[in-house]
Amino acid sequence: MQQLRQRAIVWIRNHQLLSGLGLVVIIVIFLTAISMTMYITSGASGLDLSRPGFDADRKKVEETARATAFSSTGEMKEADYTLFMEGFTEQRQKLKAMSSFDGQPLSDESLGLKVETEPNR
Amino acid sequence: MKYWLTGLAFIVALIPFSVSSINPETMTDAEKQRVVNQCHDIKRNLQSLKHVDTIARVSRGTTTTNLVTLMSAFNSRAASNTYNIPSLVTATNNVQDLRREFADDYTQYEIGLRDLILIDCKSEPMAFYQKLIDVRAKRALLNAAIKEIESQLDSFQSHTTEVLIKIRGGQ
Image (cartoon, rainbow over all chains, first blue to last red):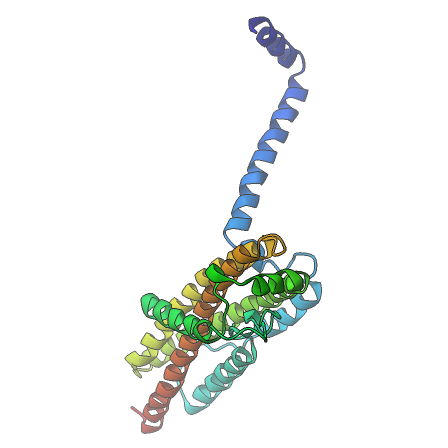
């Protein structure tokens, strides 16, 4: 065991560049594993539209993201109020047109799990 | 607010189960067979739902952020013009809090849906159905948060007229 350790130290001393590169690769793999774990467990992966399969949807989301700007400073006249209400109403309409996460897609009926012949429990 | 929403979502989630849903503890052979037979289609539907939900979550999050930005700007500008309406600030803060709760609840829902898709419904129909009920409850929380956000936006919108009255009154 002692002899093996000694040989390893000698090999590292003789191949310092190669040993350094190997160490860097190990560190990179370790850090990547940590970041991937965090990416998945935090739920960020579920919202990442840069993943394959979301290419077509990305543009739609970008269009939805556009919003009218409203300055937080300056005089407040009736025209400013109207401008604000236009932007506010536009965003609200967009919100109303989106999925409300209702229970229908996960219902027994939607998933084809309703057994017609069985009495309701 | 969180407890109120959880309670509401729990009641909402229980209503359909009490009238039509299958009890995973006492599933009959016919019900288990139904899950096994439909397994392939269910998985496909759930995968598709996961895709649609991701887009809905991102779009909803962005639009709600836009609304909060607009509302905060409106409040600041109204305040700097001495049109102080505390109800507007309260509604804006509530929307911000609810948006954060929605984001947290969505993470839990998304993890639940991902786990549900990973369960083999052909060999484990009961475990699959039990998890499905859990995911339904998590989805009900999202629906409740959305309704509460809508309610707070309604409240904000109705109180903005007070600012308009003050502008017209030249106060």
